[in-house]
Image (cartoon, rainbow, N blue to C red; front, side, top):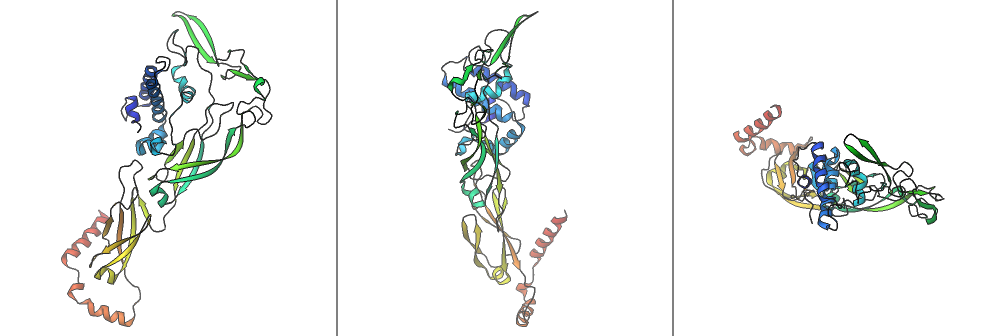
Length: 383
């Protein structure tokens, strides 16, 4: 199922400010919050959808990529290969819980997840890699396997950071909730506030004996082989993402994302211009004058191109749909062939005699129309 436009999800315009986007997200999050809609899977999906839209539109760089390339520019799962992949409830509560200040209003309906706040969910850092692609890979899409050095969950403690199950206990200060609730008397009555537990840093648990392999961190550095599916039509500088493929989080939690920066290798003969490809075809004087059939390079091999007799230098021939596909599936570009004619720098005596004999031939004299075209092109350079 294709993803909805993020602006449509939050019901804001494409020129909305960050504050307007934040306000719109808060409204949607309250409307579809799991606590208000227990057991309602549709509301839960809309809650996740709003959080994903806010995650993109509230970040200036992500928003710029989304405005330019759509979902593919920010890792849409609609493009295949696992990019994006949506956000889990733990992602949302850990990243955006502070947008609500811990609770709504005075007393009642406090926190996320049933009135008592939520334990802090650790999140691993994002990992950035560069992937070089040639034009053929860009045209068809490609699967790449890359080896990265990153933080992974400790194999001994499985990410808990504790030597064994008995080395983990519930935090005495917050009783496992991860937050400390305080009630203050004000002129408006009792006001309830929540802060992160200072003893367990919001995790709700304490480690009495650290894991000897990871020294209590729950993560270690190791090599990982990651398979990346690059959609067709990507461009130099585009950044894609794979949710959960970044660094693991301390003491369990949510993994960071893998951010993939696309680098484009130059093609020896073709030049990219957005989704079009440009090729400079060099003909001999006889080929241009008499006409011929030539082969021109494409991303997938060669294509035959008919040259009409009398083809002039500077003429552009178009091969439809021989360019690159749009990353948003809006069609395919063309291959534009610019015709150039090679004039030899040195001639033999026989060649000179032949050309001298043709010099005064009417067919070898440019007519008025040709002169006007040349003059027009010359003037356009200076206009």
